[in-house]
Image 1 (tube, rainbow, N blue to C red):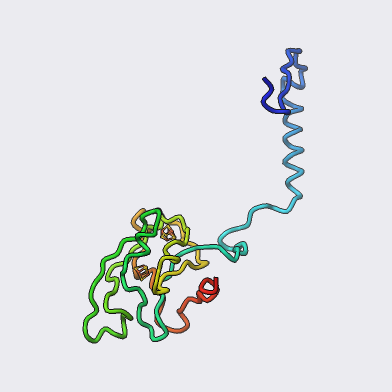
Image 2 (image 1 turned 120 degrees about the horizontal axis):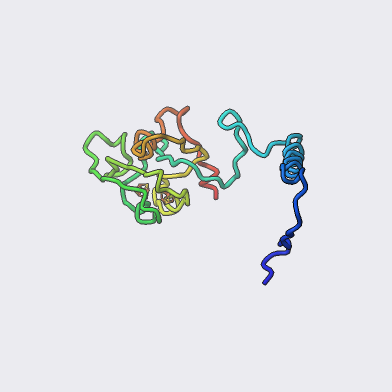
Length: 175
Ligand code: SF4
Ligand code: SF4
């Protein structure tokens, strides 16, 4: 049975001296290398050079603050339930008197962690969140040597309080 059109009938004819020394095969290989030598490379010199991301690219998550700088997340757990990779864990706590400026709702996430080794960047956590607290950004999750370094806590996820450190997610909100 013929599986592909590229199959060849095996010939039992004696090899010439040149063929036995692999000369035609080496020349053929060098011709292929030379052909690609003058072509535009298909790769880029990452991280110095970066390709333009697609409009729908989903990268590292951000936990948003509201316009007054308070954390939006209320530790409802819906993102964790929606996550197909079970990458999100959190511990909720109750907001105390005087912490209104820190946390928007009466309950907040004292611990919020995403395991980036599990995450498949599907964006379902973003879809599930009723508080517009979590979004995926265009930022790449950098490579690392230790597995623990891929567990992103609030220190890496919550955006900065200064206006210059805020992450614009308006385009994702529009969609
Ligand atoms: S992007 Fe998907 S896999 Fe990653 S944390 Fe969110 S829901 Fe889970
Ligand atoms: S990020 Fe959103 S869905 Fe997840 S716990 Fe916080 S408020 Fe709930």
